[in-house]
Image (cartoon, rainbow, N blue to C red; front, side, top):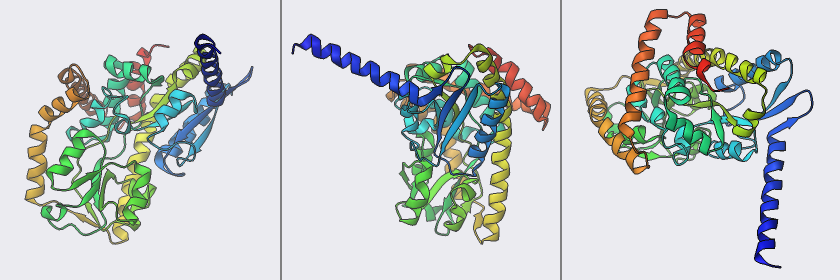
Length: 376
């Protein structure tokens, strides 16, 4: 058989595979479409509950034309594989952590990389959505190249350092193995004298129980969501910052394009509402988890002067380090992207100061200022 015939067969097979993947990711009929959605978080966690409620609302808003089947707890795809799974059509949508996909999302990672420069979850969530969805064309290009449509995600509570052994002074952290993701947070862990270990969130409990890590960086909600309150003895009471840029509403591009105009309108109407609700729910879980951990005897250590100085010195020098790191990743103008996101952080800080705790106003602001501009 000649080379041209083999090439023709290869192309045909690829076409069949692509078509099969589309059928798997969204099972459609004349009247309705079932979207397959993957998330690695555990059942009952704030993100899972929020998304279950979102898909119920989407079903109602579309008159049943879009329904969803959720695969929870990484039963279909693990955290690292979710982006590729969405891209390949294994699922139609999923929960994506940018730091676990730095190669594909080299521009979008500017959002979580600036974690040390934001401590308010609300500011982080709103600015993260604004940068990824609206202001950063390079971020949108990352998503398009990966075969997905990126429509933002909720804001978790601030990252804290949680350790299975006591911490009573900054020097106790030297040599400890700390789970962390993201370029800037990794450098911060090194600055504290600890050893960074790259793990997905759902891998933390097993790694901590097995001694692969001594501590983890992450939101206090994980004391509940991943049962870390049963494993750790110390939580460092000072936050490192908030992980912005989570991808809760990330969809296969072909699947998204198959939605009707009315279905896209429903989607973009509901995302701001559930982004706000999900961010609020995350903070509630974090507060409850902290209280529960304290009741279990977990110590919340107030950092000493040495710890505070290390973190302050890190923040003062980090922008230059981040520019160098992003340049190595192939980002052509990292300073521009950094300034875009820092400006969005300041803009949303000011906006939130004007509306206080009025969630209805915040939802409307997010709809008008960000999601109304998404290309339908």
